[in-house]
Length: 445
Image 1 (cartoon, rainbow, N blue to C red):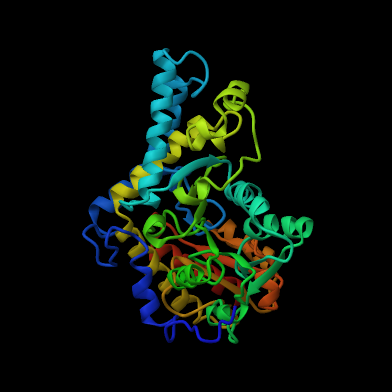
Image 2: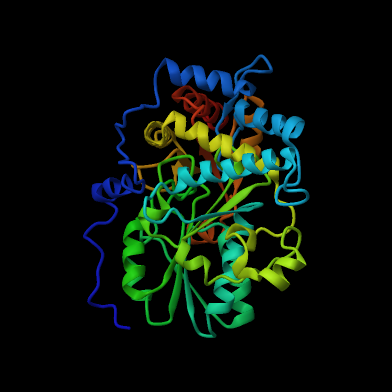
C-alpha cells in the first residue's frame, strides 16, 4: 500500500499536540478543569490518604513513582474490609449464598469503577478483564488475538519507547510465527518518538501498532490520536500501554478508538498483583482464550460453549485477585473524585518544574522535551555512577529510580546505559523537587 500521499498534520509535537491530548477523555478535559489539583481540600486528602510520607517522623520525597506508586489509605482499607467481611469465591460455589453474592457484587462494582475511569464513552464502553499486570495483559492480546489473526510476514510496529512488557511478548511471538517487528525511532535530537516516520513504515502487511500515550523516560506525550487516525486508514489495530497514563491524566479509550488499553494497579495508586485489559467490544469476539480453567468449568466449555459465557469470563481463567480488584476499584473512585483534570494539571506543572530546575545543574543532562511533560523527568549525570548517586539521595530521604527502567531499547537508541528517573504523583510538591536538586548539588559539587 503506497503511503506517500498521507502525512500527519504539520508539527505534531507543537501546541496542537498538547491541545489534542486534552481530548483523550470524553469528559471535556481541560487543564483548567472545574476541580483544580490545588488548595486545602487537595492537601487534606493527600495528608489523610498517604500518611506513609511522614510516618517515620521525617519527610520522604517520594519521586520514584514510575515503577510503583504509593497506595492510598482508602484502597487498603477497602481490601481489608473485603477480607474480613466479604471474602468468598466469586463466580464459584453456591450462587444463592448471600456472602458469595456480596463478594461478586463488590468485584463487579470495582470493574465498573475502573471502566468509568478509562472509558466513559457512551457508545462503546468496551470490556474490562482482570489480569495480574501489564505484561500479562499484552500477552493476552498477543496470544488471544494476534496468533489466530496474523500470518507469516505480517508486520507489527512498536514505538522504541515501549517497555519490555510490551516489546517482549510481541518479539517472542514474532520469532515463533514469522511476523516482522518494526520500531518507530526517535527524532534526530533524541527528545521524542519520530511519529512523522510512521507513514514510511506502514504498508498492506501492517496489522498492529503499539505505543504508550505517555513516555516515562522521555517525559513526553505521544500523539496517539494521530496514530489511531492512520491506523484506521490502513485497517490495522492499535494497542496502548496506559501504565503511565491511567491515573495521571484523563483518557477515554472508547472515544479515542483504540482497540486495546492495558494497565497495572501498582502504577496508578492501586494494589500490586492486579492489572486490566480494556478491549473494544468488536474485537473481543475475534479473540480466542489462551488460558483456561477455574471459573471456566467443563460444563461451560462442553455445554454452554465459550460463546455462552459472560465476556470477561472467557479470559479470566482460574481465581481472580478479588481483594486487589476491589482495591483497584476504590482507587479508581478516588481518582475520579479528585478529578483527572486537576491531577493532569498538577503533574504537568511538576514535570515542567523538574525539567527547569534539573537542566540548570552543571553536568546534568535531562532527557526529552523541555515542556509539556507529564510528571516524569529522566536525566544523566556526568562522571558519577548512577546507582551510587541514587543510594546517596535515598540516604537523605529523596527516592528516585535508576537503571534502564524496563526500556533498554530506548536507552540504546539514546546511546546511554542507564539514567536516573524522577517521577511525581498527586502527593508530590515542588518542595520534593527542590530537595532532589539540593541533593544533586551536594553530590556533584
